[in-house]
Amino acid sequence: HGDHSFAYSTDAGEVSLYTTLQTTDMSKEAFVKANESLHSYRFRYQDIFYDEQQQDKFIKGIAKIYIKEGQYLTVHFSYPAKDFEAKKEIHGILRSIYTIG
Image (cartoon, rainbow, N blue to C red; front, side, top):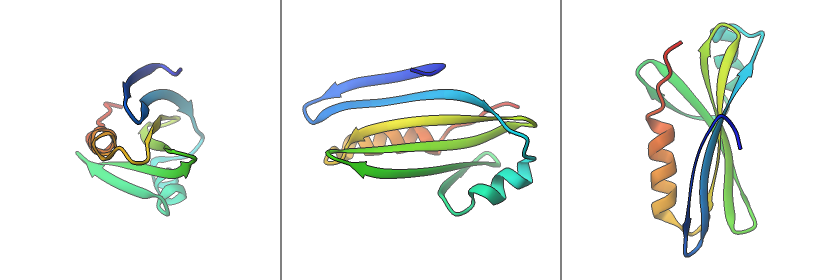
């Protein structure tokens, strides 16, 4: 899955995260405006927008980070809904993503 991936198993199920590089015609300002209704973290002047939903016994989500003109990174993630340590780990990663554009 994706360009880079990370996964491990827990008693409650698999925790996974993978990234893909996407293209866009949007400027950074337009990208921020289009995603500002999502949850977000801010790290080193970058906005990390994300949405997550429960599907059966898992939380599945996608985060988006604008990299540079014409590109953004998506981070797809999944973790067991009742595994609070996995949630903490995934959100720790999302909270600290930094890209050099």
